[in-house]
Length: 181
Image (cartoon, helix red, strand yellow):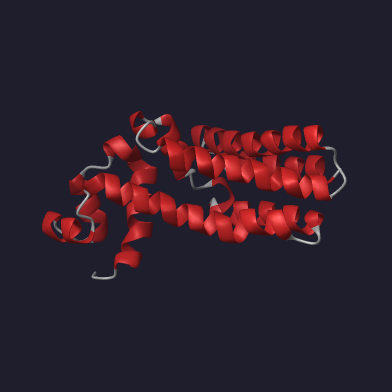
């Protein structure tokens, strides 16, 4: 494999499965089919660069498909419904953990503090903006937005811990009702 962009999803899955700390170069090599030399050719900064680029790719996906529509849609209700559908799709209906959350909870948290914080802050802000455009006051919009991100992240953790993806599906359905009320 010689396409750098094609490596990022593979790296992301290794980090999701093993965390940053547990993602050894042996596991990364096995997942990508590349030896250490080839990996360092693509990522001279090593595992830190790999994780940083994977986080940037995830951030770009969420910015384009979730955050920007929430900030700018003329129909905030439709943007919120689309956010929930996009989140459900991205996290494969609760079968996939949030890599940004995995990084935030691990020992590498401080190393990636800025992109992790920025990701969650922009999500919170974008959803609050959509809720405000939908007629909710600023304070309540911020509370509901924070509750929404908390619900999504908590449901992912609980669905994974209980090995029951239906937890995530139920949480999203209940969240939709709360956000659109």
